[in-house]
Image (cartoon, rainbow, N blue to C red; front, side):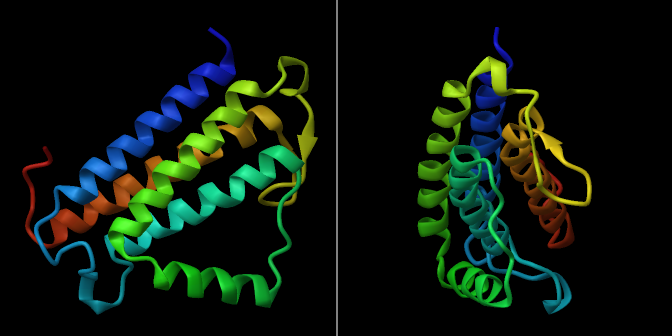
Length: 155
């Protein structure tokens, strides 16, 4: 099995896990915020959808966007404007696009590097796995939110 196929399969699994987790929440809980301070589950899914959309460009162009104040303001506005159903739909669509690009990514370029997060360059194989990692992290965040409102069934 190629690394790209494994990463794409795991990314799709992570997406399915997040969607299952957030859609099993009781009515009204996806926008519940711990202490009215933390991020709600809808916001977490919206972030994953928008990051997935940006990862399409990152993988295709092998370049991160510039995080200007204008870019971040637009991102926050878009994130706030996504309802849960819309965010889930966008997450599905963009994750599929990301996974297509991952599967098509040439073996010979897995070791190439780009500037990504932080001061050190990232190998493209690590960049290809970023959406999987990010979605998995946010699934954990949603699971934690569930425990804060009393859902300890975890299934």
